Amino acid sequence: MVLLLQIIGTIGVFLIVAAYLLLQTKKIESSNIMFSIINGAGSLLIIVSLIMEFNFPAFLIEFFWLGISIYGIIRSIRQNE
Image (cartoon, rainbow, N blue to C red; front, side):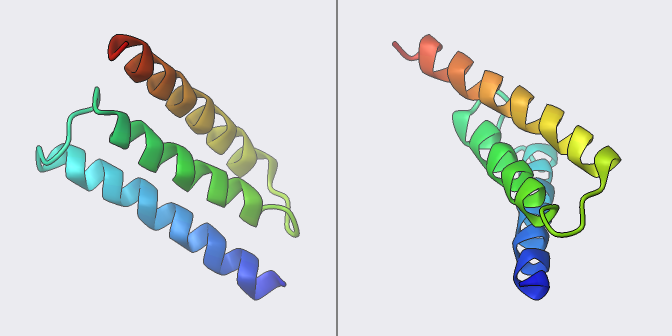
């Protein structure tokens, strides 16, 4: 179970890093809904990985990262209506 959670968390890290790389290489804009979806998915996976070995500071940053990503998703959806 611990190995599975580590794999899940690692995938989350790669998603967040990939989103940032796409942003910096101008392959995606921060206003693009996919940027927020990738970041939110990465944060959620990292939060899930903390189930067995909880770390409050890591949880806190990912909680805010996820919340901001959800805000970005909602904003993008409302702009496209």
